[in-house]
Length: 318
Length: 286
Ligand SMILES: Cc1cc2nc3c(=O)[nH]c(=O)nc-3n(C[C@H](O)[C@H](O)[C@H](O)COP(=O)(O)OP(=O)(O)OC[C@H]3O[C@@H](n4cnc5c(N)ncnc54)[C@H](O)[C@@H]3O)c2cc1C
Ligand SMILES: Cc1cc2nc3c(=O)[nH]c(=O)nc-3n(C[C@H](O)[C@H](O)[C@H](O)COP(=O)(O)O)c2cc1C
Ligand code: FES
Image (cartoon, rainbow over all chains, first blue to last red; front, side):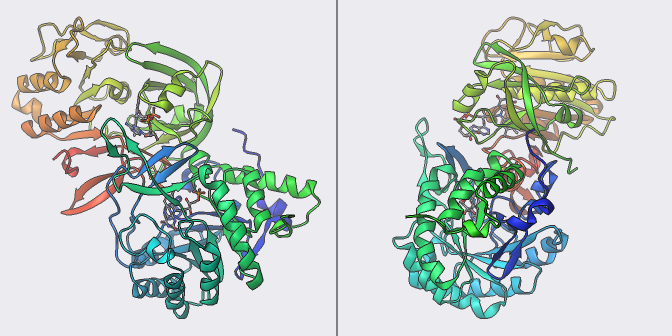
């Protein structure tokens, strides 16, 4: 094992960040749907919640959802497809039975809110408002459910209405997760900012499919799935870059994501305007990647004589 | 139940090719070797080219030497890349993962039924049960077995005719085993391995049969047949399932199988809620 032992306490000076009014101990954020309800990766020797600024819990809906039939995942070149279908026990169950078990002193836990109507989204926000999560990410970009999800995210007006519906229900920061599958991400960003979002998550997965030629069937039972991993990194960088042009005018931070696997990836996202660094598929490749990323980021900051990670954010020269 | 999962940089100590695109790999992974229990698997990053990991059952461990043995069939790009890995190379490996087979009730007679690259967990179970509970191992293959074979000295009711060979490593330890194949392999029962197990069970006394538990791993049609045998004789069957995986440790809900528990349909994760499930919980096998 090559995991250098970097304890955040040695590097907190450079790496802690402010994000939507929250203080994160490092800029790394574990992404929704990749780390269950926060209790799975802690089984791995060497994994530490203290290496990350926040863990975003699996998407929750008002009512429990069974999710899609298998196959739900499939490796594709430099990435993977998934169509989980938001399997979750319902927001109330998460608040009553999951959140009390989590080690909130080790890191922050954020909710990921989903719905098939504006009322659903508002109710989920209300449920999580009265809970120890420190922020609520709004998933208006899930490509794998029949109703709601990406249908809201692809329509800038509807996206803003979701934020408006949730805004009065909670005083916690709202972070809106934008879809790369829509035409003008900057326009959507502007509208959700005006509707009161405190942060942006950029990007969710791209819609794709895979074919089993022997059976002449889609590999993923849902037919289409969300493409994640390094394959989408150039798209994600471009979308963050576009979104940043709008977000910086309003001082709204971006949680950049899409194929981030190593320190180099994280630095690229920061330079184009990500205040925080989201890791999903990269954890499947290497569940202990966070420690290595932190040490790589620190090394870079030292070499470039930068005192804080935040001073790198949006530093693209062009 | 929630054991620690280790990430080790497993060094390949041996990689021996066998007929039918199969290969046996021995890797050094001391923490996994010390903690593994029968039915658990490892999640291997076979190559940088295919960074998503591949789940492979643990066939055998040597906790003293810190080694783990795997039997793999190259069926696609990932397993082909794994087959070409050289002795001395290393690869990231997570393990041990999954709920093991429950071998705790030593008043039972364990009937272990493995097919193809589903035989490995049965070998691990057999080694763990040795000296603790009565058992028999039935293994099926459509290509030459990737194990040394030798005539079995155990007399098994209902099992006769051509079925004279067993797996040498088991026979040497006094564990009775017999083989089945449709490919006309010498010394094997001609037919499917669940039929061999059925012949054996049918020849037991009612009392003996009632004490039996079926443990099985192998291709889907074989698991269906094992579940049917269990139903036919009214004995429980525990099946080790396969499903595509991403994280391999319970975080993504990518690897599910449908269960019915208390009348309610659910999707359970094969990686951490399984891979072993009782067949009566699985509508697909009920
Ligand atoms: C718990 C468990 C234990 C296993 N133990 C063994 C073993 O001991 N020996 C052995 O040879 N095989 C075993 N398998 C099957 C093995 O994981 C697959 O054959 C392998 O993942 C195929 O990868 P590939 O890239 O060669 O095939 P491809 O078909 O090219 O794979 C494409 C994708 O689908 C996935 N996939 C395809 N088939 C399977 C499958 N049957 N199970 C899970 N994922 C699959 C792959 O992981 C990959 O992500 C096990 C599977 C599971 C779930
Ligand atoms: C298996 C899987 C499940 C996911 N589930 C969710 C989810 O429930 N809610 C959500 O907002 N995003 C979900 N996502 C999207 C990720 O949070 C992330 O935005 C996306 O995968 C891109 O980042 P990555 O390339 O680092 O994985 C999921 C992604 C994967 C791979
Ligand atoms: S593979 Fe991720 S939950 Fe099983």
